[in-house]
Image (cartoon, rainbow, N blue to C red; front, side):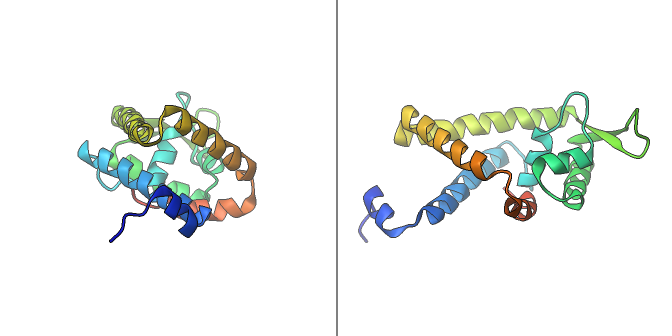
Length: 166
């Protein structure tokens, strides 16, 4: 079978398909790297939760708004992370109806390892296209994402993505 060159790919694949395939590659590479460090059954939503925590603590409702997922989807993710020991919940000092969420030492270690995984991934991509072109790609994607980020249609899709395993 003949090898497909980058030029052939552009003739046969729509942009949307290339983006989906690239997302799957990123997901697979990050998942493999994190599994090699002992992290099993981590969902993308777990990462979203952990990356949106603050030192002052944050409520589940605020996390859901920030991640643009339903409160129910966020509650499920938060409870899973509490059970796994990545988060702790403490009573909110001003609002007795809610709790504040904080990262545990185990959660902080995961975030550190996630940053290592991202650096590894970027290094691998830079080996293929070069650092300058990778920076250009990153900037282009930032522009596209920021343009569409606040549209309501994206919210329903995000609920589904939050539960996807890496």
